[in-house]
Length: 326
Ligand SMILES: Cc1cc2nc3c(=O)[nH]c(=O)nc-3n(C[C@H](O)[C@H](O)[C@H](O)COP(=O)(O)O)c2cc1C
Image (cartoon, rainbow, N blue to C red; front, side):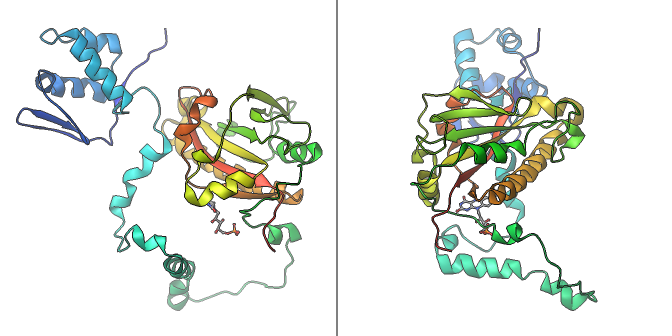
């Protein structure tokens, strides 16, 4: 039988302060405080639930089960790979930032910050000699056309031929087992889910689909779910509301972690970035616009997806015909 081990979430601190156990922002009292250091030691190396329930005699087994279940519910003990937010949320501690969160609420501050960042290479220009490249080289026009579109035309229907063309770029050449884009080890751990809005894509009913690259087809995941703007944070609600369809990228750790260990997760994120780039440009080729969405409340809609245990949400892209002023 496959193991189902639970591990301590290494991003969560704990301490015992007299008779109180503090785990992250939560506090516990009672008998559990005495045995907790032993539970923690076991959790560092992973334990099966039955194993932990049978390890302690001097605590009521119901209290122990309640405690362990509570830690699981809060994500402090887990039997799956980290969600993307859990993985990176502490990284800001290393950045010596003089900016408060409020600073970024003001449009002019954001613009000033951005301009400063975009000019950062000029520092090197004063430090190092320069080799100028040819400037009169033409690139495909499509590359210049692409830009993020935040208001889509709700009166236009995406033709079935166009959505077929866009997804063909992600299909598998089943004879040679090849794709049009690279992936670490040729393992392709990213899944593409598509939420189609009612009446917005020819031949397609509203619902959530999973793209199947072997068959170059959509499998119906959930035809009855209603994903709405509540899954989006304030600034992105309008983008979601007007788009014709959304592409969600998930990473399945079971696909490449067995080969690469934890680095497989990192490779999966790189694969996802490559796929987002390809999606942007292939859509633009078909005249369909897109906008990446950095943060959303995926927890609100995750239950529709039936993700595997080690499958996590990474990113989404809103798509449709542009209504933005050029
Ligand atoms: C990872 C990522 C996350 C993004 N998140 C958002 C977002 O949440 N909302 C939004 O309006 N644009 C988002 N964008 C679009 C960027 O704001 C946009 O690419 C950038 O301003 C450059 O403009 P352009 O794409 O029109 O060239 C995101 C882009 C990327 C690559």
